[in-house]
Length: 534
Image (tube, one colour):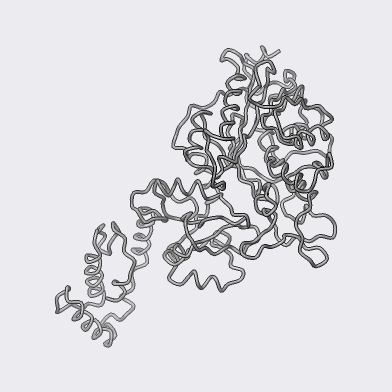
């Protein structure tokens, strides 16, 4: 018993067996010994400060079988243990051990302090070139990590968290398992003091929806427009890329009166022009857009993320480099917003990466006057792609649900004669290495004729939700086509976000084979002001 209490991990502010919050190990040691004596109905005949004599006396008790009650009585009652463990979990940061906690840990039972919360939100969705998390899932730190062997999971766990929270030697033991399935992929159960939350996926969404620490007034709510009064859409797309927005609007059946795009990449402009018969009006650099192009009903865009993403070690942040282009979006948004007395519905959507510095995210929230929602394409496609979306489109925060038309497994996107080695792939970027799976030994995700192979461009197009050969224009090379795809939005995600707009704008009659991945938000009663729309 003495040896146990001497080697037990001690944290200042822990709850002792006597239910007192203590600040020194000596208090815990004395209380543990006294509790042990009480349970086996013994009394110490020596000073509690004399460790050598205490050890001799306890050895005598052990040789005698801890009579009269026996060794079983030394066990801590289950109810009391559970109470203390739960109390300790909630009162301490799982990452650093401090008692000055801010929020509950979203993945595991326990808490996070303010500093670890900020680090957690910045790094949870940060991935290395191999597609796995750069840092530990539990603490978002860690030098040496073990990876989940589930094909659909990209989580990693560090040595310290496993050995401290699960049990000594856990890390070395798990390294012998191949594959090892992580705690969040296994059926829900405790692992030492590490207990996964059953509702962890919901808690992660809530954390990223509200982690700016700011509350905002709700955006203006527009009542749905009666079908007879709905007009075709007028859209302005900043940093348009390969026209994902236009593609989705047409797939959903919207009548688009005009679609004005700001894009400077010649390859992306060519893809948009060829696939949409020149119906997209290109206006060049976003910095030169003025009110003369308006009015518009929908403003969309996602400024370049290079200088915002913490994956980039030489990033310049929100106020330098390409990060400053966010303020072009903000400028145009203020130009287009209708006045209070104008009942015309106006919607906007801004997108960027999840793994940005907290202060950059907070500043974006401050300018846009709202918190973002986090949407990960992995729920409606075979690829991970977590992104922040700010905006005022109704129902943005509703859960994203896959439809029967969504390709959820990689095999669904492969050409004939090719076999998927994984179910889901990591986040696809402009970097060719992002197509390889696995950490130390890169794993090619496809087998063809018994040999490993990378994904073909036509397969990448289907993973993103684009039609086959969508980027096959102007004799672009494979690398050029991956580059424009790597910067694109996921089609099923944008379809999910745009679907509620059907309550506001005119649509064509869709073919019977067409359907969307999610239903529109329930219509709300129209107000008399809607009559002024025409």
